[in-house]
Length: 214
Image 1 (cartoon, rainbow, N blue to C red):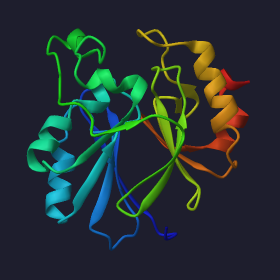
Image 2: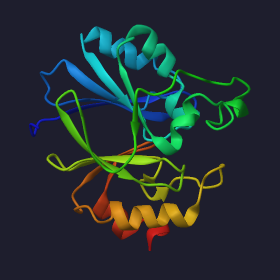
Image 3: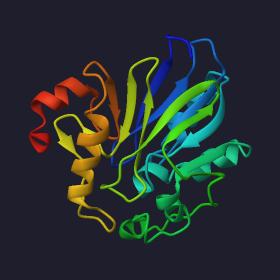
Image 4: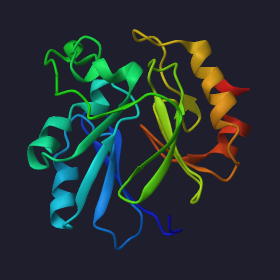
């Protein structure tokens, strides 16, 4: 993978979910979407205006604020592959499990095309991600690490100065803390962390300052 990976960030929906369009290089047309937010229209507009070809969507977990934009994207790009961890896979098709029922508008979609069963490499659009299973916010929460460029997409596991909620069904505080400490804090301090909500951070900053990890 080239060192000039291109990452475009979109803050989507009422929950201000961060969605990412990732390309191997600035010139590449093929791309990967990481999470779609509640409403993917701004992201879709960007893809179409820039003539980009989304090969896959990878979900960091299955809560509605990260997946509910999927149907709109699939309507425009019917051949796009959808990947999610096996422990969150049912959230795509169950409005109770993905929490959308709490909003009064239950969201469901077709099942995923790619079920992530284990940690390890996954590749789309010429981009190699290392899947790190980080349960705690949800049972099937994952982070996506790109070691060649020192970038981590942390979903709702780790935020700047905070961590993901664990009071939803399937959440577990002890598992989340263990996931972060054993897997994310094992990464180099200079690793840039692109989070599911809020600003980006680094592993070093969170190691030093995140009160939940002391």
